[in-house]
Structures are given as structure tokens and as C-alpha cells.
Image 1 (cartoon, rainbow, N blue to C red):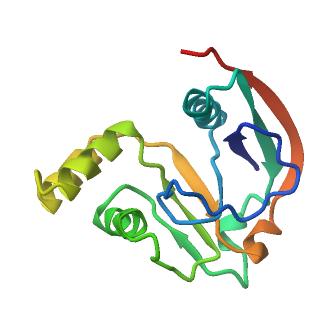
Image 2: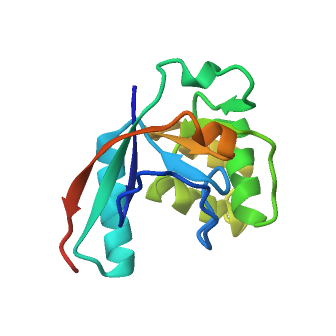
Length: 166
């Protein structure tokens, strides 16, 4: 199975990334099963960094990588209350730590982030946040949180993604 990572540079050897931008599932190396999602992320990075292009790096993983023995794996099948609490913990507390090697589940898109912002500002309650999440069709993401998890990824190539400066 293929996983994709969108960014500004080709990444042949993935590594754990600790960023000032808090990800849904914490620090690590993010991928998705959606080439379209990876391309969108490249364009978002281009806009943010004022670049004219980026790269989608492609990786092969075993089809059953979410059942890899010896790894602590958390799978969120949908954007439900449990997923929202996990994303909230990672977003609100930069020092939040979890002990999973690999986390897989929905990616919070711009509309979801807007709903989280309303919730975090106490403009909507948790029940309303969950109600809003249920109406969204979200793409997936896989966070490789440890070196052991990263060992599953095998570099398989890349694609250049052109961007237009706004």
C-alpha cells in the first residue's frame, strides 16, 4: 500500500518532526493514503512559506501495517468524541505526550479547525463540536511517532507539485 507525505522537499529518509505547528496527533512524521490530500498539503505549505512548488514523497508499507506486531497503534475509525478529545489534547497542550508508535485516523481540515476554534473559545460546547464533526467527510492521516514505526516506511519515489504564489 502507498502512503504520501506532502512538503516543500523530497524526503527519502523520514524522521520524527517536532514543529511549532501542533499536529492533530502530536509530533512525528505525517502521511496519508490520499495523494490528493498530500498535494493539498503541499499547496498549503507553499502559501505559508511563499514557495513556487513542493514535493509529494511516496512510501510503500505493508497492507496490514495497522496490525504490526510489536508496535503500539491507535486507530480512530471516525471523527467521534474519542478522536476529538485526542486531537484537543495535542492541540491545547504542547507538552502532551502519548505512548503510541503509530496513530491513524481522520485529518482535521479547515472546517474542523474552525469548529475546534469555536469550542476552544467556549462559543460552542463539546456536544455541538461532535455534531459538527459528524457532518464532515474527512481524509485520513497516519502519524509515525517513533523510530520503530518509521521503519515500516520504504521510499518509493516522489512527485513535483507546482504552486502559484498568491
